Image 1: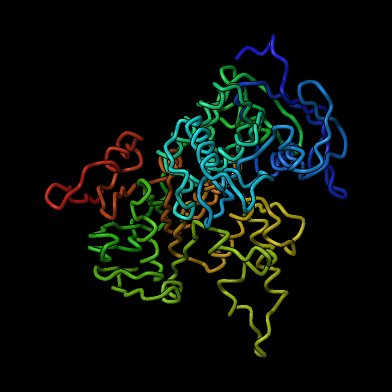
Image 2: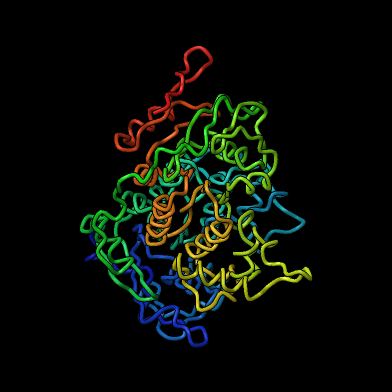
Length: 511
């Protein structure tokens, strides 16, 4: 996109933001042009969220100026931002389930009231939805909308406010591949209509597909802005983390031993999954791949005893076992890191040390039943150093950490249980590329130490990078097992999307 003859619709000059003694942003400048999709990337803690909040009036900058159409403006609140044509769509949409779609679209308008011209409201809502090129019944209740549909409603709400600058903050983090494609099409439609979009994502493939230009932030500072055609993935990652990263996600030799730690045969749960077969050796990384709805997590929940299987056989370290609850799994040496760290993995309002000891609290009780704080702190310090958790103190509440550091705390919590088999569900979802590489390294080091690891991941490049072998599932059935050394995206996706019925389904092959 050639901007040489076009004036920026929004320009931020020399923006700094300080919180007490901490500088969140330092002398940052950025320009957005009409009809441009501008990618914004950086590790967690790079300053992206602070920048967004200044643009939308949540925070006031400590210094610097903001210009819209070349004129200085003061964005003192979200309402002022909306009047200036600036709005944001976040990873978790704010939709009111008891209202219909049209009401949700116009909820920010002050002229809504008890006396409404409903015919006009629905007509205007339909016009906005059609402008996005999607099909939605605007009289439908919002309670049954998918995440992608909720985000469409949020975008429609922004358009109803005559938005000129739309910020899309990790909009695809929880979407399926099909929903991602729909959202990208909407963004492209808005670009053609002249809307300026600031697109923030950890998914670099999306940045390269959708962006006209891309800006990198690191440690609250502007590092680079380039036309997307003038930058490589390696250069972008290097700018983000501040070091060269050749073969950043390259494969490493397998650490698998000859000792089979767990064997699973004919594992089934009614209406969930059927006839699951696999072995995991000590030191091996076995990945589960598949599309949304493949039921990979359900297999993990069965192995950890949260939702036990109805039938089948599990042999652990040579002995047949029945895992009926998580305590039995933990007694065997099995740990499970949930895919949802906020809901099921961590207590966000509690400090790091308390989260690290949460799954093994009995270990820290003295003979009077009181918690040994010194022991808790010692364990937390051990994992703070081992996992490179970036925090000034283990007394800090987990909710104040970046996503990548929260993920490391959750790993530390379950490593503290001394697992022989570690099941990690979506280990790098929602974290930046630098933290992702660190988590991969942690998993590899665990395997090297002899721990058997099962990784469930929807990130196919991640699977291909770390897996010794790959179990591919589709709709609760195991479609095959592929050796990691010969696996390709095409071979995995071919199995993941293969038509399956009771007569033609292939028998899983153990390799």
